[in-house]
Length: 148
Image (cartoon, rainbow, N blue to C red; front, side, top):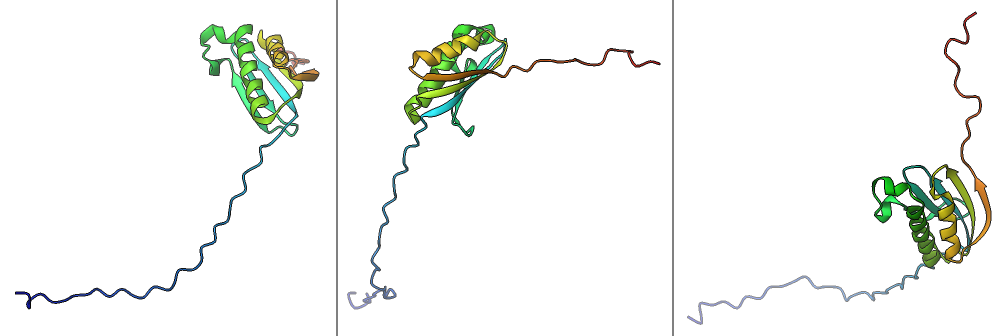
């Protein structure tokens, strides 16, 4: 029986000697530091949206009253705007080292002042406050005015 078993060897193609593998160490991405930015506050009767951006307009952090768990009519309150402002400024300050901002406010909601005060409470220096609320001038044409 031992004679019936053939000695089988599997031949594999000869492999070339392994080339020296050179591992290139990846450079760790530098943490972006933005010391001066912009704080955009869009305040309506129903919600307040806070956006922190750099000088070119690239968004660093954003938050809103709805994103912080407020629902319904509570989203339009000053307290909800304060909480949203705190979250956005805290995120931008922790991740990017934000220290000074220019504030741009748009809208007529209750959260305008509360969001600005929230930024002040986190030690961010405010250089300027600009109101960008759109104002109607002239309005639409009255019905029937153009008849000769």
